[in-house]
Length: 143
Image (cartoon, rainbow, N blue to C red; front, side, top):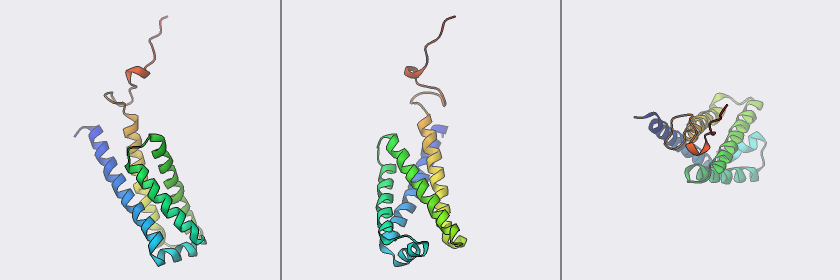
């Protein structure tokens, strides 16, 4: 399998798993009482849990839909802030690995998805890795 094809397959595997995990957490935050209790344990108001769930679902749509790269970049940034904040909140309260491991595992999937997406973005259509398309190459200079 060519490297670009391997990268694309890896991207869709990592992104699919990441979006399933984020989608599940959004559902859990909206529907499961034990997750609502965890938000209370962390000191967050109830409305934040609902807002965060809808933002996660919007981010999942942006990652899976054919949207401009800038929107995907914002979705990835939002997920990075969310996952980092979740880990900080759990660590600050002294929660054990059984509590924060979901956020850490999801963060790992986020990193793999983002890394492979950036690799795909760096490849110009029809060109070698790292080579700019002909329309972006600088003109030869004469001495």
